[in-house]
Length: 489
Image 1: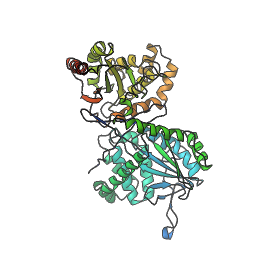
Image 2: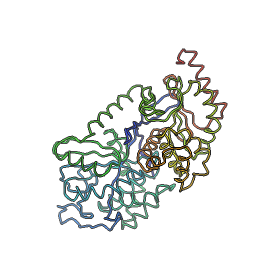
Image 3: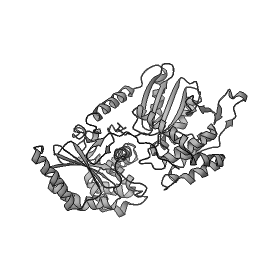
Image 4: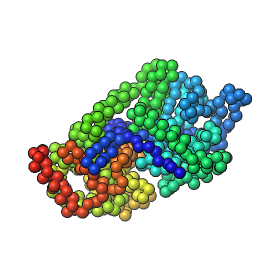
């Protein structure tokens, strides 16, 4: 069966930490902009468990919507699944990804309270839209299609499947293929397994729905996951909110929109999206690869304005952007053997600015993501490069499930504020920064390490860990070409 979504474009977003992120599609010598997006939602009982649905069949003539756990459920005129009063004055469209951990957190922790407070009262209708981020969540598209195949049978089955997929995310996400897992969920929920199997095998209609949803989210400029579009039905005014926000934020936005006002932050978000579009329209470069994005952030030493960690001179004629994975042996070889030579011969001399971006490949390196998060927390205390070195040196020590102790001991060894470090590890911002880097690299990174060399207005891709002498020769040749044309800075 074909589970390939169509090509997507990806941009960088401003996340909760205020870091603007963008994405990139590369040919060997030129960049093209790429955008990518996502989607989610689910319910629980008072104890946070999936419970048997309360289903009341619609009366004869289908004059009333079906009921699921005390809420009306159905499909909008466009065919989108919803929960709540179909005539509610406010509609919230949720764009999410079944494999996205932040989407699952919203579904499990925040959404039940929203449904109880605003769904049951008829104040808000909640609409779900699919946006699987297939490039970094390889099973997300299959999950979306599986849920849509359940919707083909019954709206209540859809919401049951939706809930179960999010609740079991940690069970199916690491699998090489999750189709059999979803088929078992469908059987457990009482679906017609023959009809479900036929739908999954002939999924063209469902895939088209997913791609339509992807395009819709793209048109709204959504680049984070989950993202929400609040619509005041009386006027058609719409407001966008990104990220797995706390309940209080939703409460405030819903109350403000109901009162006919603009939520705080909505206007700023729209302005930021316009700025991103303007920046990316200049030469086709994503913000993190532009001259503006590569400028040092005056408020965050060691970071660019685009939010990336760097070393070397920002005035260097060559910029190398490295996408790396702390659990990757080839990345370790580069970091410990090749990088010291490059630092001495090019970075220390002001000839190369070196930018680091995370690209943990979790399906083969399951602990790499946590190491990236730890390094981001170290970066907040100006210790990124110390952590970077030790994580590669001590790879065998932290490549296990319980690695927090190692990270805390390393923080103490470098005399960091361990309380602040521990708090940082539990927050969303560092993980979102890592995921944003992954989105940036997804269109062109096929393995780690991958290097993007920015020189003379072009981007050159170097896949893999080059031997030291070859990397030195490549950079030396680029510098010689610049000197010959008088563009060596």
